[in-house]
Length: 197
Image (tube, rainbow, N blue to C red; front, side):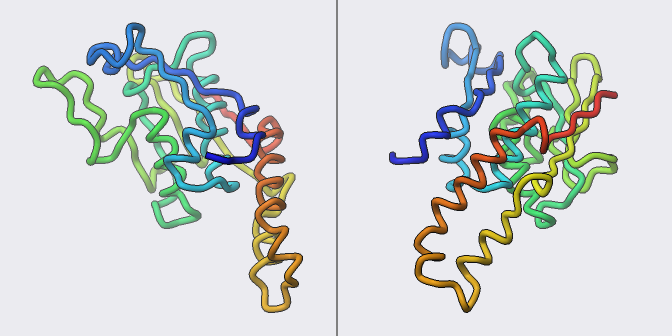
């Protein structure tokens, strides 16, 4: 698969998934997610996908500090409904990383362990865009994502789809668009706000 090389420079998200270890996926249950992994499952790379990835990266770091995030043991709340501001895309990205699902995920083994359902909520009554909560100790962190501080994705999109867009505008659009995504990913500390409760 050909893809922009900056994808490889994005920090990986490393998690521990006891279910993966239990089922023999690997010996230690450690699962690494790259931005490229998320692009493959999303089918595209944009400011929303990049923001969801960064939200998980920064949120899980704040939630777990020096220990590995425990996939499947994290409640995720999203302020918007799935069709509002592409929150459904955000939820899919974060679901892939955390294992949290609404009602469609793995229901657990017969003992009830490893359930992944009812851990992802849309339209949540929270003050931030996203909230992550550890199931083991109840600690939560909130995340706000503000790409507009450094980029204008809609302006780039409109430059390629407007009626007066030139052939050069259309031709250069994919590269310009991914340069915008690259800028977002390189400036996570500017576009992501972490609030620890």
